[in-house]
Length: 422
Image 1: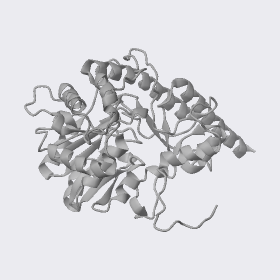
Image 2 (image 1 turned 180 degrees about the horizontal axis):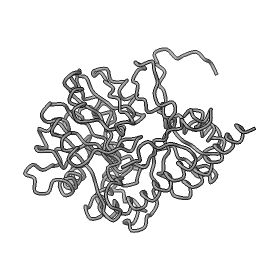
Image 3 (image 1 turned 90 degrees about the vertical axis):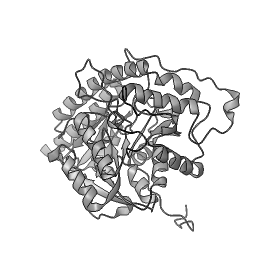
Image 4 (image 1 turned 120 degrees about the vertical axis):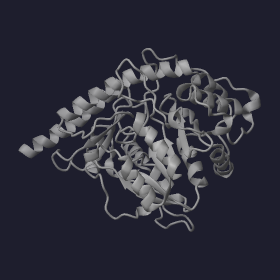
């Protein structure tokens, strides 16, 4: 194949997860290959869970919906999302969400891309480490300047409120993009702390864009109590508070292949991202939107969340115990998500490097994600790369796959330790 570049096109890097999946595919990985354990891709198991509502097995297509759908999504679904947020987080509050506060999109990346395209010429803060796909998202759109905010393990990968205020005031931030709970560290802002974040956004007029795709994977409550976390609970006025929430079926409902997401926020923002959607993507899948409605009944959402948290908490505890037995350091246990942010620094070389650890795992048919991919560095503005001694390990797959994957990692480490004794 020719090495010549095609005129006019730039090199577009793969996101971290796409890179590792492509590399694994080169070595024979496929989703239905029984020998492989995918602990890299950020996907939850999609089958039935004990105590959860039945999974959708059939989809009913209305022939009238073969046509293009509305850019912002079907009105009935938009209102259903608004009703769900009001029921879960805003009971008794005078300001309520309506369909005008909701936009439907074709997955989380599409929703975030719409938001990025609608931002003005501003400074926008983002955390390190954070979701790998943010890097290219923050590079493509030139209207705003991404400003990194470093999170330290000494502070449990949390951003103290006073530090955030200084960042907003000192750097003139007009928006912040944050995943909560955080992918990859699993750290969570909730309760009074989250209320203070919303108050800060309101008082300092800095838009808070919260990726809440893991907001049902919460492990800070008692095991018998289902807890859902959203900044929607602390918004005073849904049309004036600069708080924008992004969620969807991918993680919290465990339907990643449906590619349905929503953005909830002030009407002015919803109108702006609708305009962006009109030229970016043209709207979400139209026929399946009617089938989403039944998933958003508050009692069923609570039932699914309770079952999800019981099941994933058990997998989290199992993964943490196994990894620590192998000598892998977990500086802060995940309070949310289904990821372990693993410090490999105490493993024998070369396994103390995230990329080398990933490559060694492939030999045992195990996929992880090197930590360097979470050093969100748009356009490579910073020369120094962080997190080379880290990796993200997912406990999203079913328990059998998780066990097989951790067994493979243990074999990799034991083999390297044996070589060191020779």
